[in-house]
Image: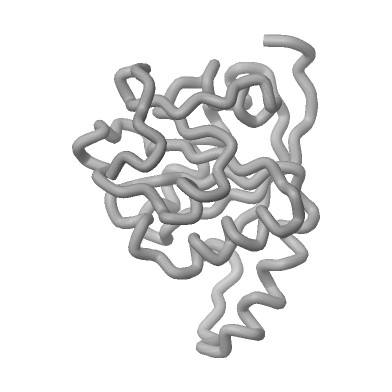
Length: 155
């Protein structure tokens, strides 16, 4: 799939889907892609309730990345921070790729975050070719997990 390279990725996700972050990185590595990813996870515990402080931690990570990948599980659409991260990435002109978590069926993920529908460049199931193509900017697909075209505002 073209020249393999190094991609700087910010991974937006609901904390219950944190296992999927490492699975995504493994998938890309297996395909020969080196990703330098960053996200907010348990390795950086943060008990702050101050939104401005939390945003000050997240902003530089999104600014650093060339692409924001949003891992979408059954509850992701309910997460205010995920929508904020997508909106901020959009303001910076970053590529935004939605990826349904591994093993998810379209019926398992009835809603995607509102801002993915508004600002996303691509939405795909757990398919390495589609994910890599979307990160590289070669795919602008909105697909179901079965690989069929998804209605843009499907929910």
